[in-house]
Image (spheres, rainbow, N blue to C red):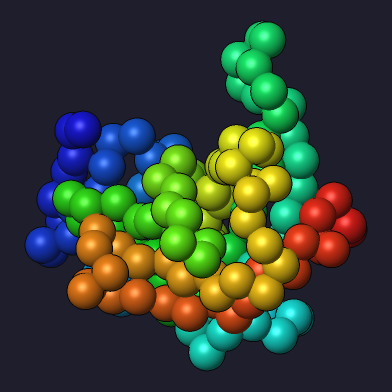
Length: 147
């Protein structure tokens, strides 16, 4: 993956331009961290939304998007973020549209999501669990497709 370095913060070129700009502005201290947490979650963030979406592949199975919000921004370098639900790990994610860097949207195959259990602990970590790990509370599958 190609990236641009700004003040020792790597900005992946795969980020949409608006998200890349937000990461750059956060890195130099111009953009304040926006944080709004309406639901109870873990000490480090919350699962904001669970929703079923069609696969981006024409004939692929459906997927579940898990939108997580952190109390601190999700600024990345050369490694990626990993969502852990119980003992399962998911690595497909994107930043939401706009300037939000306090949120990530993970995409999980519906079959894999079906194997998770309500009540399992949910964490997001950067690179490896020994690095920065963020607790998001416990999974509540009853929130799937609720607005």
